[in-house]
Length: 374
Image (cartoon, rainbow, N blue to C red; front, side, top):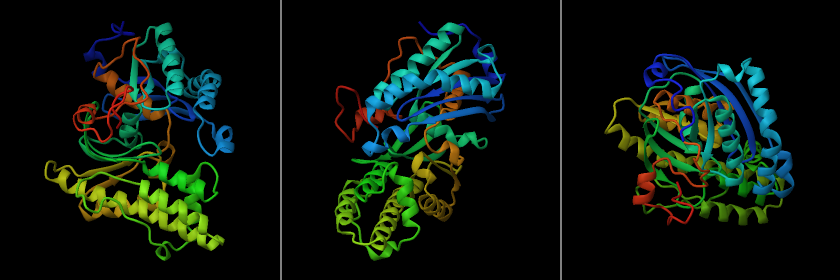
């Protein structure tokens, strides 16, 4: 059964504004948002509510899946109600409901997915299951209209990949991490340095007072010329050096060196992708999305790389770099416009690559019983 399958025709959706409620529960934020997508492609965020679980997980130094799932259960109804109230709308004003269906912590994903299905079913609205990564891919469009295609660097706590984005559901992987994501490296190195949780922002603050040139860190995959990433060696080396830090100055220098090393690798691989992308497309736009895009050093380094190769640089507004439901609502609205609605039996997916065909045909990690990884 497809929820709301006869709600309106594709022609009607293509020529009118669409207002969609989005839900995001893939990790440790319970989020709801209402976004209106105009007929000419302009997205307006009518509300965006995010309940953070940072305090719930701080004592453990990272996200505990069971705690996250229970918090989502407790918060999802209230957060959604706030988003609807702040938008000044009732469910009668909605054209659809979108929710993250993966990838992510499957217990949390199930909460938002189930709540979204129930809301759509109760109101007779179309339901749209959204890939969390696709939400990040379109998040730059929350700040201004953006034309397809573009080159995307998706860099977050759980994902690090370069993609050619030709449209909704039409993306090709150019490179991905073979081990850890950049955001994971930031957080785990920060934890080894005793900086607490969340570690990435704390490391960035400390790095601002350090001199990264004083510490040499290993560079990964120097024998390869593709666009893949690797951060496990850097993470291990920095964690060992953290144990030898004796002063606050030592720790600040290490933080600056780590930040520089991560930014450099992201820039080098993006440079290779830009060269390949430019051979196929005249429209040169480089979009950086995901939580790590909020790091100022990473952002400025990538912006300089884009300028070097004649690419316009674009990142989402800071509020939409980290996990949020506005990007899910927008991806849902774009899918709804194309008539891509979902069935009531759509399952939560802990793994869900954007370029699933490439992930299966040329896996970086061997597919397990839960599916191919990104």
